[in-house]
Image (cartoon, rainbow, N blue to C red; front, side):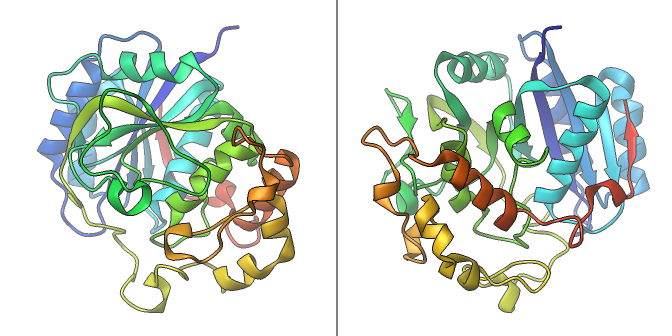
Length: 312
């Protein structure tokens, strides 16, 4: 049986009490208007009010799916949970697209087709579509402006910000049916992404010449979590008493080829753990380090115990 092409996950959150539901509806309509076959759209909702939930379901009905999570969890967790629920219901997909609530495709009905065509054209594990702002290209990649004229391969150890991104099924399967590392309360997640791809022998690419409108923090940045104190330190913001410095001091981190927040010099990866073409020499070792150290075990966070209502 042929796999579905893309699971498109539109992520919203209500804990800030800013729930621009008319904006959500406009964004969702523009995703539904895509000239692309064999994709499924799901709203991953965390902490949204009944007013918002009712307006979304009355507007779209069964045109889309919904995963309503009332509890206060991070968007990394809610996205992972929603993907798991959809795979359980519909089977695996070729790729899983994360879309933040501030992204709007507007009247471009070719976004999914363009992204999918590039995604399938090479061995890509992660594909980024550019946002109109807050890409992080300057700090991470030294790029002014946008990626134009040629698709850009993000080198191992570099990154950009997460707004609209496809992750591969290989990544989903490699990390116990999870995609985005869930040890993080707020920041720094993206600094791990290039290693996710390397661990499954894939690459991370930025799509050239495609820029989507982005309204920053439309329903609250890292909403529902205190990221102004010690947990919000950009180098140490982990769950369950974990300490990123201790994780990075583990000799296996460097030996396996892992790196962390290299733009701040926290843990530059071991270049000797990579071939000249940028592929990992020890992908299984790197994969196991990430699986056990960048994702929470069931004792710290059990996805099967998340309270939710999934509507097919």
